[in-house]
Amino acid sequence: MYDFQKQLERSVTGWNEVAQRMVGGEGKVKDVCADCNNGVLSELDAYGKRMLSGSGLLVHNYTRRDLTLEYDYALLLRWLLKVSFNSSRTDGAHSPLFERYIPFMRGLGPLPTRSQVGVLLYLSRPEVLGQSRIAEEPFVRITNGASLLNPFLVRICYGGIPGEQRYVLRLNIFGPAVFYLMMFPDGILPGHAASAIRRLIKITPGVVELSPKQKVVNVRAGEKSWLDLYEHQVARVHALSGG
Image (cartoon, rainbow, N blue to C red; front, side, top):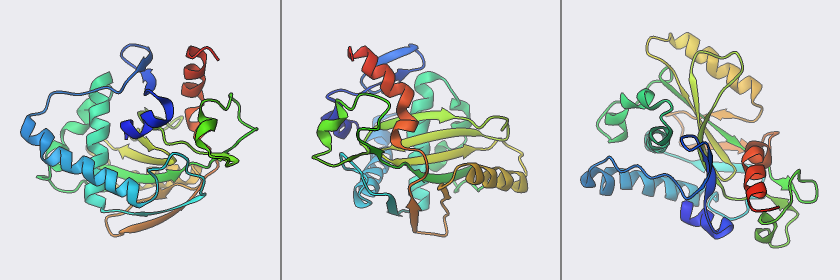
């Protein structure tokens, strides 16, 4: 995914929480053994690539306003947890939340319940060129004449809902697809977790919950564009590039 993104940006640039500045290149975590890294974890990454490619997400410019995603819930959740866990260890945020799911990520533990981890998917809408709040370069060169822009960018981060204390929200963003991981603490009642999931769905029009009982989900683009999600980071990149 980072190699694919580099085709658009020439380099991967993002905000590093530890350095508190924009840095080039993606963070790397080197604390797993070769057997896991080249075996089960590599297989998870291969699944993620197949899923993104098979759904049409692994493209330079996603201009559609809908998405049909075929997925294996257990494999998808293992991959999302693994990717987000790696990110959390580079900046020290929320890493302990993932540790109890290490056996599951390795394919050796039970599937987390809905009251442990909720998984939701949001599709960002494309931005109309000429109406952007930032200069259109360097992204405009990837549109091939299209009037809409929705570039493939990767961001692994965390967010929050004002006043919400029942969970930690982790985000895995791959192009227009935003996967929300709602990480609930031990001891939360299933009804309280379900209530938190319903609230997030209500305040985020277009987001849908993924389920282990389903293999396919259809998502319509929501109100937020990719630029709404990336505005602050893109502005920092543009400023650093001398624009």
